[in-house]
Image 1 (spheres, rainbow, N blue to C red):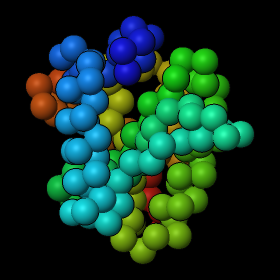
Image 2: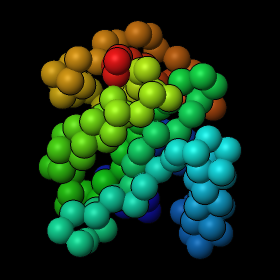
Image 3: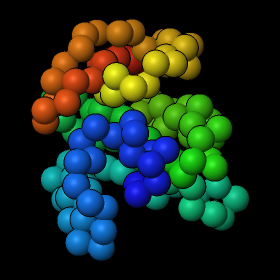
Length: 136
């Protein structure tokens, strides 16, 4: 997350990414698992760590997020499709939301998946484009 190519699309990353930030981040993500029974995963491709992502409950909605190492950006669609197959098999997830920062201008992949633009929203002081995809 300290790579500028990743950080440019993470408007909530307004702090220095260091060891303390990493520990707090992991604790927050693990709390999601304890609270909701689901959260983010470390993602491996051919045995190598390529990033993290998964589902995080925001209110009554399950939001999907994916953060990949820059050299692995091309794996996003494949990983997203696998995650969505998981969501479709999980009765807790009738739909998935995606919050894209305004810096993400290419949305054709989301549209191909069937996601629909809902609105622009403010979340923790940043503006995002919100999309929704039904899973049932």
